[in-house]
Image (cartoon, rainbow, N blue to C red; front, side):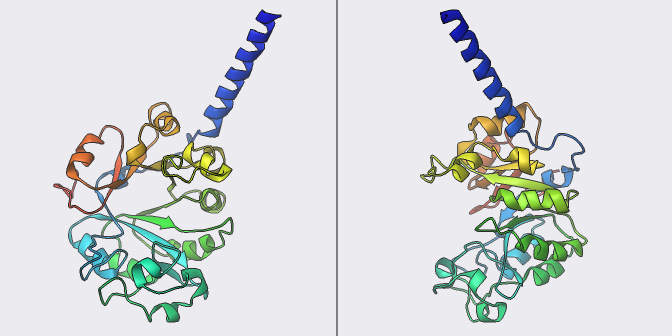
Length: 280
């Protein structure tokens, strides 16, 4: 009886291990080429200074990144009247000093507010793409607060018309699922972190995101993980076993960047300027 119980236990453990490996498996076959995104460092929300005249996600910060030959990471969400704009937070208080949410305002209403201490205003994705004009690669983070990802179609229509190199990423697995179904040729990345260590490990969504358990649904082309938690097993398995491209966010010193070069391929930085903007 004891031997039978041990055997059953071992079988169950092996079955769970197989299911886990299948759950976190990213896209393995027909992977798109991600070489271009490994050639430059990416300025997090542009080359910005929230106490100066080029705050985060502003046209001034993006212009500075382009002039420095840096890739750009930016955040996109959609206004109440269906305009894709570039803004990180769902709420306006931190950057604009006022109450309200991007999704509850029209684009015209948002133009009443300036960013941080500057005269910059919330930019449209359309104007940003016209300014960059393919000169540097882009990482477009799509912000979706709920399972309603209808914003993807609106944003994608604009990205389709853009001639430069870009990929998309999101914390929301439903965003990646939308792109997998509707725009499978677009490079897509799953953003994640160790949410237990960040104190928000309280529901099944954050548990699954921490351990990359939604990869079976989204089949990402790269994993963008909080570099502070590089030891997370799912991330390491994707990197080492599945040989999957890995992006690190957000690097805040040259020392950390150098230390992480063996673990990651793509680097998103903030609060310092990498010694070599052009990597290759």
